[in-house]
Each structure stands twice: as structure tokens, then as C-alpha cells.
Length: 65
Figure: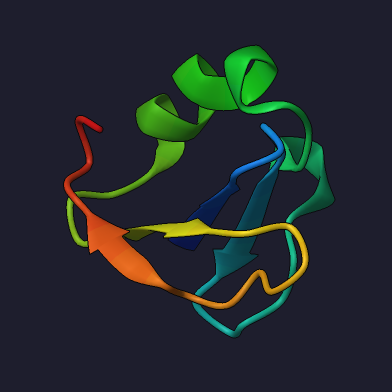
């Protein structure tokens, strides 16, 4: 289950499950997986913006962003 989504400023997305494991099936350009992520992410999933050089969780954002 999707737990955290980090959208990077280069357009890519990092997605992690509840165990902190990466979910490669969702890790592509945001525009290519956006619908798929939103359909599978539970309401409690956290969404963040990050930068490519430092993909840490810089700023939590609302799901609709």
C-alpha cells in the first residue's frame, strides 16, 4: 500500500510503502503515474515536494496538489 509520495522538481516521483520500501511500478515521470498513484493511495498517504539533488521530504503538500 502506498504510504509516501515524493514529487521531485525534475518531474520524477518516488513512492514508498508502509515499510519504507520503494514501489518501482510507480516511480516514473509524475505525469505518467499521477492517476495510478491517486487511485491506489489511501487517504492517509503523505505527499511531499522534493528536489532532485536532495530528494528528502522538504514540504508536505495536500493530496490534490
